[in-house]
Image (cartoon, rainbow, N blue to C red; front, side, top):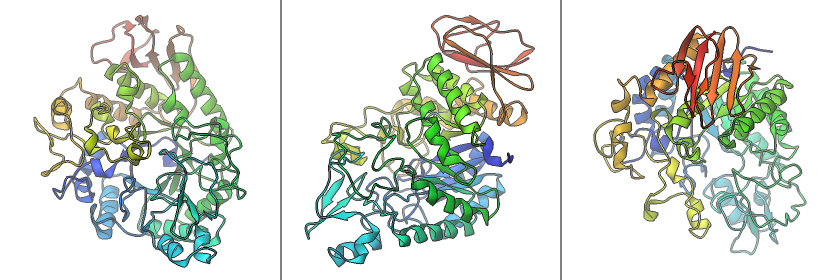
Length: 510
């Protein structure tokens, strides 16, 4: 088993539109990100995953790509991206870029050519065109098919502006190998693969008999005509082979929403991808038994193929976990210590280190997620976790921009800015910095084994050798701590003493 950097890396997700704006137009960009590299290095993360920065009409926040080999002018230039990669490396940070292989933008030259060429033309074979649609549904709501002027229909599992590619077509496979080479040649350290479970479809396109589809709470995917098909694995083996020529430190992480940890493990077999997000952990309710079951099943399935687990609590597609856990910030702080004490790697979503909550009351007129319109304005979509970060100052835009932020920030975030938390030892930012520092310095934390300790039913207690115990109290009553030498870190800024309060966690030296 190789000891690659990625086996226990902590990687920070930069949702670039909302991170930091360096040009004053209200949208985060590469200039803003480059200026904040010292902040990210000081936080203690190992790498950055940057959401799509490619030229795009932005029908889905950049996940509708019109050109995979350039940078959208709203974010900067290709030379800005190359400078960012160099400067990040100078700060000891690796760069992971987002690759979007399931679909392109409807403005991509290939799709424009397909529309111009007409039915039966070879240009249409790179997408999924049919004379009659089936009953598949879009993840964002509504049918997964749109009719074009000549009467044919094209498939889009997401927005109509995101036509699905036909991965049975050799040109599609060749094109993406070339795109990977393009970015690897520019020094990126890896790729996050968007919708890694969706690229291959059953060529028969059978009806599903379902009237719904969802990203986070999917229907059964064990033998599904367009999710988690066996054919995706051949593609990823070819990608792994390509990356190997650039050295063993270039990595892939899969966004794969699948049925169970055993299905997920198929994506990270030794000749496929390196890691895959653990969405079962993200979806887990605040119950000790459920967490323990997910942790055990994940470690068992992934260990069987020699892969590490990759834990995650939030991202740009789901409600922020401060809000999701219904227990607010104390539970979110405890969840961090749980996650960072588990064997494997972890992803942080920008702003969670500030304790940011989901903004659930954005005015309807500012909503931009395609889910809002496609659901007939019944589902607000994901904008609430994408509100721009608060950096400093007493009122919006909190140092994010000199202009007007593309989504409004709540005035109450004045207490949650980086500047407000910077020198407060009890702040969430301080907790993140300290947790990451201890994790990096302590040989017990990171990759390795875990052993459970006896505990109350609503308590998780486990040991990481040498000499660290993590205890998380998910119950409603305080519990006694096990014997220990000292408290390394507690999620509750008060001294835990000999008992652990509800909704809190502690790392102990034993």
